[in-house]
Structure formats: structure tokens, C-alpha cells
Length: 218
Image (cartoon, rainbow, N blue to C red; front, side, top):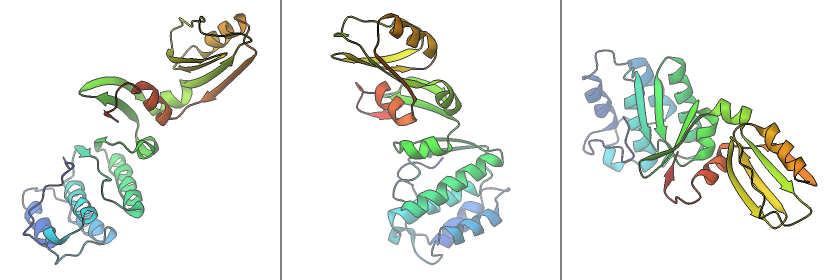
């Protein structure tokens, strides 16, 4: 596990930290450590306490990746990283998954989650609000914009798959996870003058799911 605060021994140098950690793991991957040392441009003789936040993050990730982990747990792994560092991390995560490591990570950076995750859980204060695969989102989740020739406040869509509904005068905006055709058919039966169905990304699903919960975490 790599925690958000990246706990390391501040008095050690980068090189000593790596050697010290390697001693606990018989299957330590020295080749991976050396590769990431170069990729992350870590200064071997610098003490941990003198490293920037981003450099400490890189060092903590190196220590985790070189252990041949079966399960890797990361808490806000991109915190303190510049755009290049973020890109390097995401590439490394994909590589780790390709070697059979299960990666579980929490993040508020939705674009990063959407780029590499297979499955997403949206949580708030320990409550699981949604558990869905990215493939399911891409295949089934839709935003449905409806316009009617009258005030639509009284219209209801009691159909399975309607995740949320917002009404603004003559307009209704629905977020659906299934049964899109049934929803559209009901809208036509209710005299909708305009119907627009569009795919949605993780950000919109996240915002709709947690609009009443201000401390949500993906």
C-alpha cells in the first residue's frame, strides 16, 4: 500500500531507502527499481527530507512497484506529480496490471480514473453509492434530453434504469443505465417534441450520483 502521506524515513538517502526496503522482499525486482529510478529521475544521494512532494511520491511508488505485489493499493497516487509524472504513473499502472497485479486506487481525478480503470466504485463517508464497470458505462449509460410543449413538472418516468431526473420548465433531463428505448418510447407517448440521447462519461455519472454528498471519492 502507498498511502496519501507517503511515509518514508526522512534521514535516509534515496539509494539507502531502496536498499533498505529491498532487504525485506526475497522477490524484489532490482531491474524494475533501476528502471523507475531512471524514469522518475530520482537523485540517489539526496535525503528523503530534502525531496519535493512529487519526488517523495515517485520514490514511494518505486518501492511499491518493485515488490512484485499481487495487490497494490494506492491512495491519491498522483498527488504532487506534474503532468509528465502523472503520465508516467498511469503507464506504470497499466504495465503492472498487464503482469497480473490487481491495482486498487482512490482518486478525485476523474479523468485519470476513466483512462485506466476497469471498474469504478463511487463512495461517500464509507457508503458505496455505485459499483460499475467502465465498459458498462460506455455501453449502457445515456443522457436523455427531452422537451415537451407544456410544463413537464408532472411527468414521471417510473422505468427501471432511470438513475436521475431533473425538470426545468418544459425540459426533462434523465440519466439512464438501461432501458433507453423504453424511456424514449414513453417520452414520445407523452408528446415530447425533442428527444436527444447521448453517451455520458464518468464525470457526469459521478456528479449526478453525489450531487447531495459533497465529500465523495472515486
